[in-house]
Image 1 (cartoon, rainbow, N blue to C red):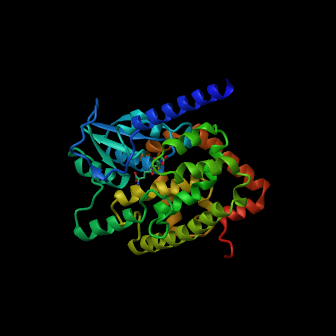
Image 2 (cartoon, helix red, strand yellow):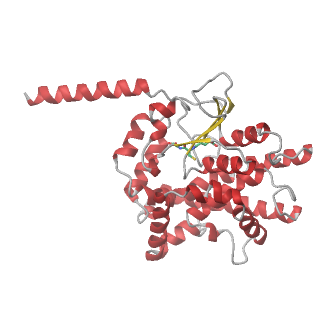
Image 3 (cartoon, rainbow, N blue to C red):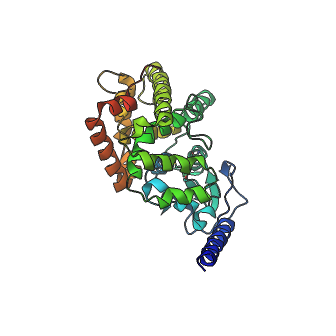
Length: 339
Ligand SMILES: N[C@@H](CCC(=O)N[C@@H](CS)C(=O)NCC(=O)O)C(=O)O
């Protein structure tokens, strides 16, 4: 009898899984505007985004600089509470299962570096110009956008090419600290439905270690160390660029999409408690002053500070407490250790 009941329960679970999987179709999507896709919408501009997500911050910041109003759809990530990016409703907007998605007149634009370019090019007359006209400046801007964008499914695979791919490695402490308050069932749901299993596997590992035992996890420690080294290299290059142009921004006088893109890198280092490893106390004076300038802009308050998330705040407090208790952990997260 018990065997029969167990068999029925297993059959029920398998049917549920197969049904859910058929309803949550997920696949890689091409970058840029998808003119052939028409999504239900109410406003000219709509943004599917998350408070913590680095790329979401970038698009929000760009919209704020342009003064473009948009309908906001907040979508949870596993570390901010639940895997809403894997839900049916969101996968209908982006089968790739990632935020942000900018929607213009019902057509989605995928990838944040494409979204900021599209928004700046399609903002109404009178909006601030965030793209220089001069071809040489335009291509220089693109170099600095590329050097701060997040490419590919594996967030740190291109850490040597872009600070945007080095910064997720430095966000690991924040992920681990945030996962302490997320139930196990959430990352497990990711294992069942995520297109790229490596991401939920990572979050399961962070849930297991929490912040306190992070430095005992060899692969996490190695990834953090690699990303620390790469971030130092990217910021040295930025220091040189700011010295060359004399600032106040990456291309000199004009504030452009390159500055939008770099603001969120600094903000993430702040949020994960590692900004002091790279700036301040005489380190990289041009970069230090540049970051102060960026965070003083009204767009920073509107697009970033006003979207503070309580789980992120508590995560930051846990990181600080854990580092204070364990200097070895602090060293592993902030110092370049001998290889
Ligand atoms: N290259 C993409 C990155 C998109 C991405 O990886 N987004 C993250 C948040 S920053 C996400 O949605 N993660 C959800 C998940 O992987 O489960 C972009 O620039 O928009």
